[in-house]
Length: 276
Image (cartoon, rainbow, N blue to C red):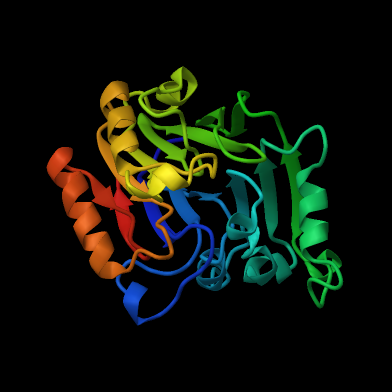
């Protein structure tokens, strides 16, 4: 399978949604990234950004057959699932992939718990689409569709998280969010996912000052991301999983600092589309 590859950001914040005038330009929804591989749609994470993506997809005249890959199942990465309109359309098909839950849980259990009383008014049986749950162990290679390959690795995050390298028609996207890493050290497995990537979408939640008091919280800085991108000889570093306390003005400054240190670095912005 061949075709154009594009990345669209529907949610770029971490931890909790933060809509409002101070975050209007960069966006306040939590992680959700849509990748178009030719005619195929791949979604990374199901944060609150999944709701507007679903509202856009549900207008399609044809039935949907889509893969959703989760970095992990903390609330900010799955909270959009009950509000994803295409789940309520009969004839649609979705494969939900998670690589950090086995052996103590699985993705099916997560969705059922998320939509259960007293946490939610309706249960998962309200979905009319066909949902298939594809649990795996981080580190496995996945071939979900012809011509599409995903390499995975375990990230440094409480409860575990999965990093992805999506390869399609000569283009490479590394999706590496919710990972911390040791100061001054780079994980060889993470370097391998980012090696020569066209774009590395990386968790840059904290500044170097903030992370001193946030050790063990499972998030990183743009400086660590820049070292990773340089070591992996990746093309574009994309700052992602923005701190909800960082408003647009702060993000302007952060992005300028990162781009000055590593030319070509960009900041993920809700609604932005990147054609590879």
